[in-house]
Length: 419
Ligand SMILES: Cc1ncc(COP(=O)(O)O)c(C=O)c1O
Image (cartoon, rainbow, N blue to C red; front, side, top):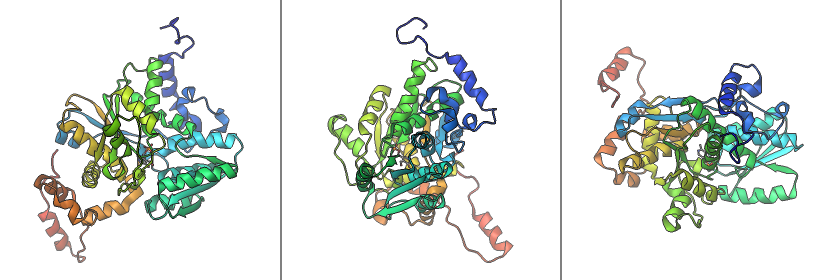
Protein backbone atom coordinates (compact mmCIF):
# COMPACT_ATOMS: atom_id res chain seq x y z
CA UNK A 1 0.00 0.00 0.00
CA UNK A 2 2.87 2.41 0.79
CA UNK A 3 3.35 4.99 -1.92
CA UNK A 4 -0.21 4.79 -3.29
CA UNK A 5 -2.04 8.12 -3.33
CA UNK A 6 -4.00 8.68 -0.13
CA UNK A 7 -2.29 5.90 1.83
CA UNK A 8 1.00 7.61 2.69
CA UNK A 9 1.57 8.30 6.39
CA UNK A 10 -1.29 6.06 7.45
CA UNK A 11 -0.73 4.25 10.76
CA UNK A 12 0.33 0.64 10.42
CA UNK A 13 -2.69 -1.68 10.87
CA UNK A 14 -0.84 -4.39 12.84
CA UNK A 15 0.75 -1.81 15.15
CA UNK A 16 -2.68 -0.32 15.89
CA UNK A 17 -4.19 -3.72 16.66
CA UNK A 18 -1.35 -4.47 19.04
CA UNK A 19 -1.53 -1.06 20.75
CA UNK A 20 -5.31 -1.26 21.26
CA UNK A 21 -5.01 -4.72 22.76
CA UNK A 22 -2.08 -3.69 24.95
CA UNK A 23 -3.97 -0.73 26.45
CA UNK A 24 -6.49 -3.12 27.98
CA UNK A 25 -3.89 -4.09 30.59
CA UNK A 26 -3.14 -0.49 31.62
CA UNK A 27 -4.53 1.13 34.78
CA UNK A 28 -5.11 4.53 33.13
CA UNK A 29 -8.75 5.58 32.65
CA UNK A 30 -8.23 6.52 29.00
CA UNK A 31 -6.76 3.09 28.33
CA UNK A 32 -9.46 1.20 30.20
CA UNK A 33 -12.18 3.02 28.27
CA UNK A 34 -13.45 1.02 25.31
CA UNK A 35 -13.79 4.32 23.45
CA UNK A 36 -10.53 6.11 24.24
CA UNK A 37 -8.51 2.93 23.83
CA UNK A 38 -8.99 3.73 20.13
CA UNK A 39 -7.99 7.38 20.54
CA UNK A 40 -5.54 7.17 17.64
CA UNK A 41 -8.66 7.40 15.46
CA UNK A 42 -10.35 9.91 17.77
CA UNK A 43 -8.16 13.02 17.70
CA UNK A 44 -10.74 15.37 19.17
CA UNK A 45 -9.53 16.25 22.67
CA UNK A 46 -6.26 16.05 24.62
CA UNK A 47 -5.88 12.86 26.64
CA UNK A 48 -5.85 14.68 29.98
CA UNK A 49 -9.21 16.39 29.19
CA UNK A 50 -11.09 13.13 28.65
CA UNK A 51 -14.20 12.55 30.84
CA UNK A 52 -14.67 8.80 31.06
CA UNK A 53 -16.75 6.30 33.01
CA UNK A 54 -14.78 3.39 31.43
CA UNK A 55 -17.47 3.02 28.77
CA UNK A 56 -17.35 0.48 25.95
CA UNK A 57 -15.71 -2.93 26.40
CA UNK A 58 -19.17 -4.43 25.95
CA UNK A 59 -19.69 -8.17 25.41
CA UNK A 60 -20.34 -9.92 22.12
CA UNK A 61 -22.68 -12.76 23.02
CA UNK A 62 -23.59 -15.86 21.03
CA UNK A 63 -27.31 -16.54 20.64
CA UNK A 64 -27.41 -20.25 19.83
CA UNK A 65 -31.09 -20.95 20.52
CA UNK A 66 -32.28 -18.00 18.48
CA UNK A 67 -29.90 -18.86 15.65
CA UNK A 68 -31.21 -22.43 15.54
CA UNK A 69 -34.81 -21.24 15.54
CA UNK A 70 -34.05 -18.99 12.55
CA UNK A 71 -32.08 -21.62 10.64
CA UNK A 72 -28.83 -19.65 10.93
CA UNK A 73 -25.46 -21.16 11.80
CA UNK A 74 -24.30 -18.21 13.80
CA UNK A 75 -25.92 -15.26 15.53
CA UNK A 76 -24.21 -12.74 17.78
CA UNK A 77 -25.38 -9.80 19.87
CA UNK A 78 -23.13 -6.88 20.73
CA UNK A 79 -24.70 -5.61 23.93
CA UNK A 80 -24.23 -1.87 24.16
CA UNK A 81 -26.69 -1.88 27.04
CA UNK A 82 -23.75 -3.06 29.18
CA UNK A 83 -22.30 0.46 29.17
CA UNK A 84 -22.09 2.46 32.44
CA UNK A 85 -25.52 4.11 32.09
CA UNK A 86 -27.06 1.10 30.37
CA UNK A 87 -27.13 2.24 26.74
CA UNK A 88 -25.02 2.74 23.63
CA UNK A 89 -25.26 6.51 24.13
CA UNK A 90 -22.30 6.46 26.54
CA UNK A 91 -19.77 5.87 23.76
CA UNK A 92 -20.80 9.08 22.01
CA UNK A 93 -21.38 11.05 25.19
CA UNK A 94 -17.86 10.58 26.59
CA UNK A 95 -16.51 12.08 23.36
CA UNK A 96 -18.87 15.04 22.98
CA UNK A 97 -18.99 15.92 26.68
CA UNK A 98 -15.19 15.92 26.84
CA UNK A 99 -15.14 18.41 23.95
CA UNK A 100 -17.83 20.57 25.61
CA UNK A 101 -15.87 20.78 28.85
CA UNK A 102 -12.54 21.37 27.11
CA UNK A 103 -14.23 24.22 25.20
CA UNK A 104 -15.22 25.88 28.49
CA UNK A 105 -19.01 25.34 28.52
CA UNK A 106 -20.70 25.35 31.94
CA UNK A 107 -24.05 24.06 30.67
CA UNK A 108 -24.79 21.14 28.34
CA UNK A 109 -28.24 20.14 27.08
CA UNK A 110 -30.11 17.56 25.05
CA UNK A 111 -33.60 16.61 23.94
CA UNK A 112 -34.07 12.93 24.51
CA UNK A 113 -36.25 9.83 24.39
CA UNK A 114 -34.49 8.91 27.64
CA UNK A 115 -31.14 7.27 27.05
CA UNK A 116 -29.28 10.34 25.81
CA UNK A 117 -30.43 12.26 28.87
CA UNK A 118 -29.26 9.49 31.20
CA UNK A 119 -25.85 9.40 29.53
CA UNK A 120 -25.46 13.18 29.37
CA UNK A 121 -26.49 13.62 33.00
CA UNK A 122 -23.93 11.07 34.19
CA UNK A 123 -21.00 12.43 32.19
CA UNK A 124 -21.87 16.04 33.07
CA UNK A 125 -21.91 15.08 36.74
CA UNK A 126 -18.50 13.42 36.40
CA UNK A 127 -17.15 16.57 34.77
CA UNK A 128 -18.80 18.92 37.28
CA UNK A 129 -20.79 20.85 34.66
CA UNK A 130 -24.54 21.49 34.70
CA UNK A 131 -26.95 19.69 32.42
CA UNK A 132 -30.42 20.44 31.07
CA UNK A 133 -32.67 17.63 29.86
CA UNK A 134 -35.77 18.19 27.70
CA UNK A 135 -37.99 15.12 27.49
CA UNK A 136 -41.51 14.58 26.16
CA UNK A 137 -43.87 14.37 29.14
CA UNK A 138 -45.10 10.84 29.84
CA UNK A 139 -43.33 9.35 26.83
CA UNK A 140 -40.09 8.00 28.28
CA UNK A 141 -39.41 4.97 30.46
CA UNK A 142 -39.23 5.63 34.23
CA UNK A 143 -35.82 3.98 34.56
CA UNK A 144 -34.31 6.54 32.21
CA UNK A 145 -36.07 9.48 33.85
CA UNK A 146 -34.80 8.31 37.24
CA UNK A 147 -31.24 8.29 35.94
CA UNK A 148 -31.35 11.94 34.85
CA UNK A 149 -32.59 12.87 38.33
CA UNK A 150 -30.11 10.61 40.11
CA UNK A 151 -27.17 12.17 38.25
CA UNK A 152 -28.41 15.66 39.12
CA UNK A 153 -29.70 17.03 35.83
CA UNK A 154 -32.24 19.84 35.55
CA UNK A 155 -35.00 17.73 34.01
CA UNK A 156 -37.86 19.40 32.14
CA UNK A 157 -40.79 17.37 30.87
CA UNK A 158 -42.33 19.30 27.97
CA UNK A 159 -45.92 18.83 26.89
CA UNK A 160 -44.97 17.68 23.40
CA UNK A 161 -43.24 14.76 21.65
CA UNK A 162 -39.50 14.18 21.07
CA UNK A 163 -39.55 16.19 17.85
CA UNK A 164 -41.14 19.11 19.75
CA UNK A 165 -38.37 18.93 22.38
CA UNK A 166 -35.73 19.13 19.63
CA UNK A 167 -37.42 22.25 18.24
CA UNK A 168 -37.52 24.02 21.61
CA UNK A 169 -33.93 23.13 22.43
CA UNK A 170 -32.82 24.51 19.06
CA UNK A 171 -34.18 27.90 20.17
CA UNK A 172 -32.69 27.65 23.67
CA UNK A 173 -29.13 27.06 22.43
CA UNK A 174 -29.41 30.09 20.14
CA UNK A 175 -30.28 32.29 23.13
CA UNK A 176 -28.02 30.92 25.89
CA UNK A 177 -24.42 29.64 26.08
CA UNK A 178 -25.45 26.00 26.28
CA UNK A 179 -23.61 23.22 24.48
CA UNK A 180 -25.94 21.03 22.42
CA UNK A 181 -25.44 17.30 22.90
CA UNK A 182 -28.11 15.88 20.60
CA UNK A 183 -27.05 13.15 18.19
CA UNK A 184 -26.36 15.66 15.40
CA UNK A 185 -23.30 16.64 17.47
CA UNK A 186 -20.40 15.38 15.33
CA UNK A 187 -18.28 14.34 18.32
CA UNK A 188 -20.99 11.98 19.50
CA UNK A 189 -20.73 10.18 16.19
CA UNK A 190 -16.96 9.94 16.63
CA UNK A 191 -17.45 8.11 19.93
CA UNK A 192 -20.24 5.98 18.52
CA UNK A 193 -18.04 4.67 15.72
CA UNK A 194 -15.77 2.88 18.23
CA UNK A 195 -18.06 -0.13 18.88
CA UNK A 196 -17.29 -1.06 15.26
CA UNK A 197 -13.57 -1.27 16.16
CA UNK A 198 -14.31 -3.28 19.28
CA UNK A 199 -16.61 -5.62 17.39
CA UNK A 200 -13.84 -6.34 14.90
CA UNK A 201 -11.36 -7.07 17.70
CA UNK A 202 -13.90 -9.48 19.18
CA UNK A 203 -14.38 -11.14 15.77
CA UNK A 204 -10.61 -11.55 15.34
CA UNK A 205 -10.72 -8.94 12.56
CA UNK A 206 -12.98 -11.10 10.36
CA UNK A 207 -15.91 -8.81 9.54
CA UNK A 208 -19.39 -10.29 10.04
CA UNK A 209 -21.58 -10.21 6.93
CA UNK A 210 -24.32 -8.23 8.58
CA UNK A 211 -24.86 -5.78 11.45
CA UNK A 212 -28.44 -4.88 12.36
CA UNK A 213 -29.32 -1.74 14.35
CA UNK A 214 -32.54 -0.12 15.56
CA UNK A 215 -33.44 3.15 13.84
CA UNK A 216 -34.74 6.22 15.68
CA UNK A 217 -33.01 9.52 15.03
CA UNK A 218 -30.78 7.46 12.69
CA UNK A 219 -27.35 8.58 13.87
CA UNK A 220 -26.05 5.26 15.13
CA UNK A 221 -26.10 3.40 11.83
CA UNK A 222 -23.99 6.06 10.13
CA UNK A 223 -21.59 6.24 13.12
CA UNK A 224 -20.96 2.51 12.81
CA UNK A 225 -20.65 2.88 9.05
CA UNK A 226 -17.99 5.55 9.61
CA UNK A 227 -16.11 3.17 11.90
CA UNK A 228 -16.08 0.44 9.27
CA UNK A 229 -15.12 2.87 6.49
CA UNK A 230 -12.13 4.08 8.52
CA UNK A 231 -11.03 0.52 9.24
CA UNK A 232 -11.19 -0.30 5.53
CA UNK A 233 -9.18 2.81 4.70
CA UNK A 234 -6.48 1.73 7.15
CA UNK A 235 -6.45 -1.88 5.94
CA UNK A 236 -7.73 -3.17 9.30
CA UNK A 237 -10.58 -4.94 7.52
CA UNK A 238 -11.15 -5.58 3.84
CA UNK A 239 -14.92 -5.72 3.68
CA UNK A 240 -17.57 -3.85 5.65
CA UNK A 241 -20.67 -5.70 6.85
CA UNK A 242 -24.04 -4.77 5.45
CA UNK A 243 -25.61 -2.39 7.96
CA UNK A 244 -29.39 -2.73 8.17
CA UNK A 245 -31.78 -0.48 10.07
CA UNK A 246 -35.02 -1.67 11.64
CA UNK A 247 -37.82 0.70 12.62
CA UNK A 248 -41.05 0.18 14.54
CA UNK A 249 -44.11 0.26 12.24
CA UNK A 250 -45.48 3.21 14.20
CA UNK A 251 -42.26 5.23 13.86
CA UNK A 252 -41.09 4.33 10.38
CA UNK A 253 -40.27 7.49 8.38
CA UNK A 254 -37.08 6.03 6.89
CA UNK A 255 -38.81 2.81 5.85
CA UNK A 256 -41.60 4.80 4.20
CA UNK A 257 -39.18 7.10 2.47
CA UNK A 258 -37.20 4.20 0.99
CA UNK A 259 -40.40 2.52 -0.22
CA UNK A 260 -41.85 5.73 -1.65
CA UNK A 261 -38.88 7.37 -3.31
CA UNK A 262 -35.73 5.35 -2.67
CA UNK A 263 -34.69 7.69 0.16
CA UNK A 264 -34.68 10.87 -1.94
CA UNK A 265 -37.05 12.69 0.43
CA UNK A 266 -38.42 12.01 3.90
CA UNK A 267 -41.91 12.81 5.09
CA UNK A 268 -42.04 13.13 8.92
CA UNK A 269 -44.64 10.96 10.68
CA UNK A 270 -46.44 11.27 14.02
CA UNK A 271 -44.57 8.53 15.83
CA UNK A 272 -46.27 6.00 18.10
CA UNK A 273 -44.62 2.87 19.46
CA UNK A 274 -44.16 1.26 22.87
CA UNK A 275 -40.44 1.10 22.05
CA UNK A 276 -40.22 4.66 23.36
CA UNK A 277 -36.51 5.11 22.62
CA UNK A 278 -37.23 5.05 18.90
CA UNK A 279 -40.52 6.96 18.98
CA UNK A 280 -39.16 9.59 16.60
CA UNK A 281 -41.09 10.87 13.61
CA UNK A 282 -38.66 13.36 12.11
CA UNK A 283 -35.18 11.81 12.33
CA UNK A 284 -32.34 14.33 12.11
CA UNK A 285 -29.81 12.01 10.48
CA UNK A 286 -31.93 10.28 7.85
CA UNK A 287 -29.76 11.35 4.91
CA UNK A 288 -26.67 9.82 6.52
CA UNK A 289 -28.67 6.64 7.16
CA UNK A 290 -29.71 6.43 3.50
CA UNK A 291 -26.06 6.78 2.46
CA UNK A 292 -24.96 4.10 4.96
CA UNK A 293 -27.57 1.62 3.74
CA UNK A 294 -26.53 2.34 0.15
CA UNK A 295 -22.78 1.94 0.52
CA UNK A 296 -22.91 -1.12 2.79
CA UNK A 297 -25.77 -2.80 0.86
CA UNK A 298 -28.03 -3.09 3.94
CA UNK A 299 -31.82 -2.94 4.17
CA UNK A 300 -34.43 -1.04 6.12
CA UNK A 301 -37.34 -3.03 7.55
CA UNK A 302 -40.27 -2.23 9.80
CA UNK A 303 -41.68 -4.45 12.55
CA UNK A 304 -44.95 -4.49 14.47
CA UNK A 305 -45.50 -4.06 18.21
CA UNK A 306 -46.28 -7.78 18.47
CA UNK A 307 -43.09 -8.70 16.67
CA UNK A 308 -41.05 -6.40 18.95
CA UNK A 309 -42.59 -7.88 22.12
CA UNK A 310 -41.93 -11.45 21.00
CA UNK A 311 -38.35 -10.70 19.95
CA UNK A 312 -37.68 -9.00 23.27
CA UNK A 313 -38.92 -12.05 25.18
CA UNK A 314 -36.72 -14.30 23.03
CA UNK A 315 -33.64 -12.18 23.75
CA UNK A 316 -34.55 -12.32 27.42
CA UNK A 317 -34.87 -16.10 27.26
CA UNK A 318 -31.26 -16.27 25.99
CA UNK A 319 -30.26 -14.79 29.36
CA UNK A 320 -29.25 -11.53 27.71
CA UNK A 321 -32.25 -9.20 27.76
CA UNK A 322 -32.57 -5.73 26.27
CA UNK A 323 -34.94 -2.80 26.17
CA UNK A 324 -37.81 -2.83 23.64
CA UNK A 325 -36.12 -0.59 21.05
CA UNK A 326 -33.17 -2.96 20.86
CA UNK A 327 -35.43 -5.95 20.20
CA UNK A 328 -36.48 -4.58 16.81
CA UNK A 329 -33.13 -5.92 15.57
CA UNK A 330 -34.15 -9.54 16.11
CA UNK A 331 -37.69 -8.92 14.86
CA UNK A 332 -36.19 -7.42 11.69
CA UNK A 333 -33.67 -10.23 11.28
CA UNK A 334 -36.55 -12.73 11.24
CA UNK A 335 -37.97 -10.93 8.20
CA UNK A 336 -34.59 -10.74 6.46
CA UNK A 337 -33.91 -14.45 7.10
CA UNK A 338 -37.42 -15.52 6.08
CA UNK A 339 -37.13 -14.11 2.56
CA UNK A 340 -33.47 -15.02 2.01
CA UNK A 341 -31.93 -11.56 2.42
CA UNK A 342 -29.84 -13.15 5.18
CA UNK A 343 -28.51 -16.63 4.41
CA UNK A 344 -27.75 -19.56 6.75
CA UNK A 345 -23.98 -19.18 6.35
CA UNK A 346 -23.88 -15.48 7.14
CA UNK A 347 -22.62 -14.14 10.45
CA UNK A 348 -25.06 -11.59 11.82
CA UNK A 349 -24.48 -9.21 14.72
CA UNK A 350 -27.50 -7.62 16.41
CA UNK A 351 -26.65 -4.33 18.05
CA UNK A 352 -28.55 -4.31 21.35
CA UNK A 353 -28.65 -0.66 22.30
CA UNK A 354 -30.19 -0.64 25.79
CA UNK A 355 -30.26 -2.70 28.99
CA UNK A 356 -33.38 -4.68 29.92
CA UNK A 357 -33.75 -2.74 33.21
CA UNK A 358 -34.24 0.53 31.32
CA UNK A 359 -37.91 -0.30 30.78
CA UNK A 360 -38.95 -2.98 33.26
CA UNK A 361 -42.53 -1.73 33.10
CA UNK A 362 -42.76 -2.99 29.50
CA UNK A 363 -41.33 -6.37 30.47
CA UNK A 364 -43.65 -6.85 33.43
CA UNK A 365 -46.72 -5.90 31.36
CA UNK A 366 -45.68 -8.35 28.64
CA UNK A 367 -45.32 -11.26 31.05
CA UNK A 368 -48.59 -10.43 32.79
CA UNK A 369 -50.29 -10.43 29.38
CA UNK A 370 -51.18 -6.75 29.73
CA UNK A 371 -48.91 -5.22 27.09
CA UNK A 372 -50.62 -6.02 23.80
CA UNK A 373 -54.30 -5.27 23.27
CA UNK A 374 -56.86 -7.84 22.17
CA UNK A 375 -57.15 -6.07 18.84
CA UNK A 376 -53.40 -6.38 18.31
CA UNK A 377 -53.41 -10.08 19.19
CA UNK A 378 -56.42 -10.87 16.99
CA UNK A 379 -54.45 -11.50 13.83
CA UNK A 380 -51.69 -13.56 15.50
CA UNK A 381 -51.43 -17.10 14.09
CA UNK A 382 -51.43 -20.20 16.29
CA UNK A 383 -47.63 -20.66 16.08
CA UNK A 384 -47.07 -17.12 17.31
CA UNK A 385 -49.59 -17.49 20.11
CA UNK A 386 -47.84 -20.69 21.21
CA UNK A 387 -44.51 -18.87 21.19
CA UNK A 388 -45.89 -16.08 23.41
CA UNK A 389 -47.35 -18.69 25.76
CA UNK A 390 -44.00 -20.55 25.94
CA UNK A 391 -42.07 -17.40 26.78
CA UNK A 392 -44.45 -15.69 29.21
CA UNK A 393 -43.45 -16.04 32.85
CA UNK A 394 -46.00 -14.25 34.99
CA UNK A 395 -45.07 -14.34 38.67
CA UNK A 396 -47.33 -16.52 40.84
CA UNK A 397 -48.50 -15.77 44.37
CA UNK A 398 -48.53 -18.80 46.70
CA UNK A 399 -48.86 -19.58 50.37
CA UNK A 400 -45.55 -20.10 52.17
CA UNK A 401 -45.72 -23.86 51.70
CA UNK A 402 -43.08 -26.15 50.16
CA UNK A 403 -45.74 -28.52 48.77
CA UNK A 404 -47.33 -25.67 46.85
CA UNK A 405 -43.93 -24.75 45.40
CA UNK A 406 -43.21 -28.36 44.42
CA UNK A 407 -46.58 -28.66 42.68
CA UNK A 408 -45.61 -25.68 40.51
CA UNK A 409 -42.27 -27.33 39.67
CA UNK A 410 -44.05 -30.54 38.65
CA UNK A 411 -46.37 -28.61 36.36
CA UNK A 412 -43.51 -26.95 34.42
CA UNK A 413 -42.63 -28.19 30.90
CA UNK A 414 -39.60 -30.52 30.87
CA UNK A 415 -37.43 -28.30 28.62
CA UNK A 416 -37.20 -24.56 28.06
CA UNK A 417 -37.87 -24.89 24.35
CA UNK A 418 -35.71 -25.12 21.22
CA UNK A 419 -32.10 -25.75 22.27
C1 LIG B 1 -32.16 2.07 23.14
C2 LIG B 1 -32.10 2.84 21.87
N1 LIG B 1 -32.03 2.16 20.72
C3 LIG B 1 -31.98 2.80 19.54
C4 LIG B 1 -32.01 4.17 19.46
C5 LIG B 1 -31.97 4.81 18.12
O1 LIG B 1 -30.68 5.26 17.79
P1 LIG B 1 -30.57 6.39 16.69
O2 LIG B 1 -31.35 7.55 17.19
O3 LIG B 1 -29.12 6.68 16.59
O4 LIG B 1 -31.16 5.83 15.44
C6 LIG B 1 -32.09 4.94 20.62
C7 LIG B 1 -32.13 6.40 20.56
O5 LIG B 1 -32.45 7.08 21.50
C8 LIG B 1 -32.12 4.26 21.86
O6 LIG B 1 -32.17 4.91 23.03
